[in-house]
Amino acid sequence: MDRAVVRRGLCPLQPPRRSMKPNLFFCLLAFCLTLAACAQQPAEPQPPEIIYGQDLCDNCGMIISEAKYAAATLLVEGGSHKFDDISDMVIYHLDHPNEVVKAWFVHDYNSEAWIRGETATYVRGDINTPMGGGIVAFENKAEAESVAAEVNGKVMNFDEMRVEVHVVIHGQ
Image (cartoon, rainbow, N blue to C red; front, top):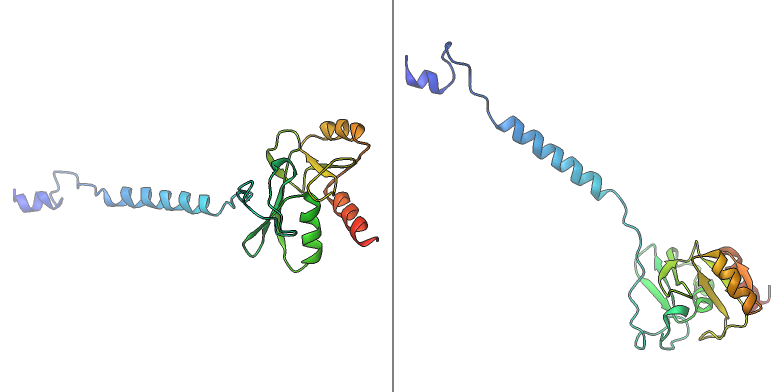
């Protein structure tokens, strides 16, 4: 039998050789589809890094020195703002309504960990904060209620806190 015929898989006595190319193609296709699916998942927004004792508040220009009072925002069009006080964050965005906020960040008053501002519980009371707003944030509502009782404070959600700052600043 002609060896060339056998090599080409044309010999009727031997089964034709299978090419590895289709298997490789399907493996690469599966990999690319998996990669594309992962790339479409939006990443959870992360707060900007604040260098305490060095970075300046974007509202008042003071040095941001204490994490438990600091706040930050990420903007839809890119960029971020850093603040030394939660009330400064709210005031800044009341004064700049054209800047659309993608994510609000505050620190938990007790743990000083970053938490999402939209889901935090707030206390406004007799608390000495950098700009005198007297507002602190908590991840846990029970902790907020406990601190509120100690500081003659009011417990609020995110929207209530923003209205409270607006009323204090603008009297409405």
